Image 1: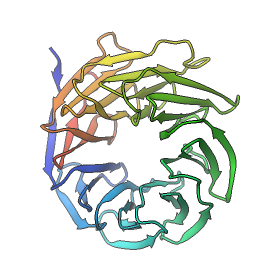
Image 2: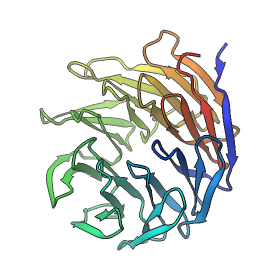
Image 3: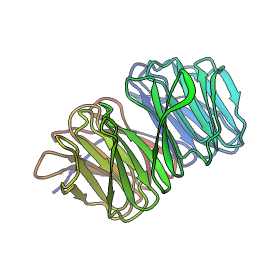
Image 4: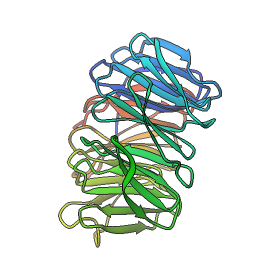
Length: 338
């Protein structure tokens, strides 16, 4: 019998949770609702500390700065906003040259935040001023991601991935692939850069060897990717089954992936715990599962949230935050050895 993941607290917001993040230093949880509201909750109690109509028409993404002092958000009103995370005071708002700012990402130093809107890309200071503007991409930017611990980031659009730095508006390198790529994920050690693709495949780039691999056979397009902290395992969605690739040694080529089957509907969210090999998955069936990558009985525990899971985030190795399509935010006690 599968163990149940205990609920620590549950908070009810109004709309679909479209983005979720946690601040380790500040013990905060931030949730973005599809309506455009932002809410910050106390990590221990679930109390709503502040909630505001942050973006007209809708929020696309939010993220805490690395030190937790600031919260950045972007949305369908064309704005990137910087907030004081604990008090909710708006510190800056930058309007981009597009109606829809879809992606943002803090640099590892926390001094800048990257934002993309359509084909446009800019680097802002943590005070909301433009540090650097980049040339327009030939197509819509599907995702952006900083390389862990480096002043380098990747953007993905139809046909290629580009590598940039925070010091120059000329790409360092371009990685072509003739297809539609949707999601980026850097291996923590920087050897691999992986994309989840529209054609139900993954593309692995081995950057130091200028080689690439393709892994196909997924049921649907792949938008869910998560590396474990050691950089050995990559978990991916793309259907009802969690697919985990072992990238140690010579890499995943020729290896059979680990298939974690339990969900009855499509997986919407995946996230490894910040340490160890515990993986959380959430799906449209409203179920949350905790998996151990190295145990024979992979499924550690599970929970029912009541509606489709839209987001998951970890706050330490035992606290799992979950957002749902009906606006609930839950804190679960995710014991890795129940």
